[in-house]
Length: 280
Image (cartoon, rainbow, N blue to C red; front, side):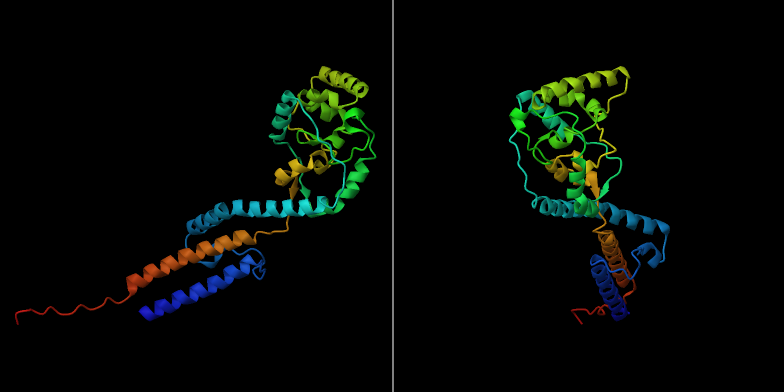
């Protein structure tokens, strides 16, 4: 009996180790829908608890895996672009507002496919650059060579702000108006009058507002994108094989424990030596 259970235990360990290795490499022979609850007869509570364990344990790791992949690919793609950047100088109050805006989270209605966005990024930048300028930059501070990535205010790319619609400015006016001297004075006064007109309409301001008609990765500055890349992009580059791997490992541990308990319960006890008196 002991040999039988040892053989069963070793067999299960070999099978599950192989399966875990296949799942980790993205093996698709199960169709990507491997469910340990269907493979093991037993109560539904076992299946649910096992799935919950694997989901909670590995979802954070999967998210970090995707973030790291997107960050590294984004850095590689943007490193090939040369542009003139400006060393902006903010007052103490402006720096506080700048940091406050950068610490915020913004509402992106629909995230972008990362691989497609990186592939089309330069073309989309060139297309957006043809839009009319809403407000000019202060040429004494920035000259006339501004492009995407040249400067930023808070989480926003400065190049985008020059072409952002009035409604965007309206929602972020309380913060962006702190940086008045960074923009063309005449253009700022005209923009301010249009903002006052919008205020008369009583539109509630939304500090999380992102322009729904402009790709979000053109609105945010590159460094903010890197820090919050999962907010703007999604990727299918790394499918749920990590989750399946976790499910398999959890099942392996549980089944091994069950087999060990059964081995202990059903193994024949070792017969004790008969008592012998030391006197006789």
